Image (tube, rainbow, N blue to C red; front, side, top):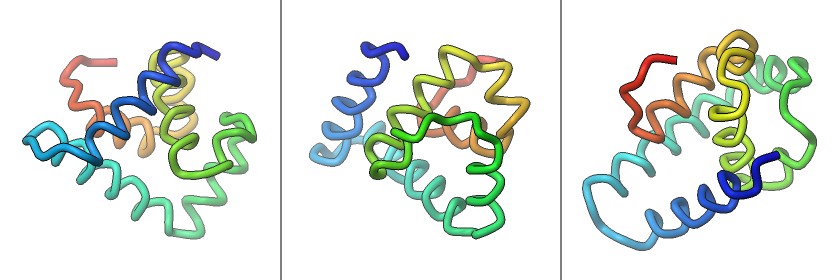
Length: 100
């Protein structure tokens, strides 16, 4: 686990919830889209059955995002292979245009 990426994600998430800017709006809108996507029971099952995320990701929505971002940078190929829809959602949340 990359603690720096994890904690930076918390700071970014907290900041974007409390400021008004184009970047903050984009982040929050795409984060909410991810949460909406995961309301689908089939998607939840797919996520859990993948075994890709450690249990700590499911503590709450803040830890979930932080763990997703860790995986995005630490094991992008595996993430994209196992959970491509979520991988692309994280890419949008982070507003990254780079090709992984």
